[in-house]
Image (cartoon, rainbow, N blue to C red):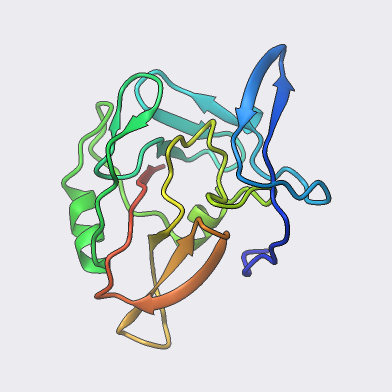
Length: 173
């Protein structure tokens, strides 16, 4: 279930959910792929967080370094090495909560939108997400020098050197 997902032509479209129009902003569409993270699977909060109904997890809508302006994420995401991302998460207080953390590999993979590419995430829920690699808290058990990431360019997950700098999106239980 959490293996790297094959990609083909991806998507851009608009969905009608509960009587409201939600834009699923994507660069290309694969009409044969199922929608894996529809907007209706999330509870959007006014404070820049979102709760994924499927997993029960609460996510920051913006990447670390970006600012929630009440409707979207502004600015540019920061990049951290793996240890730096874990340390930075422990210092974050956002939306009144101080228990934010770097997600596990499985948790971050749960945000991949199979129908989208560049970024492979629901942009209505997670606006202005960088089409790049994001760290997970999951170390590579076969190499103490590596940890797992999720690449929102294509939705793949892979293991790379912990010293590399990647983006970070935080989660809380």
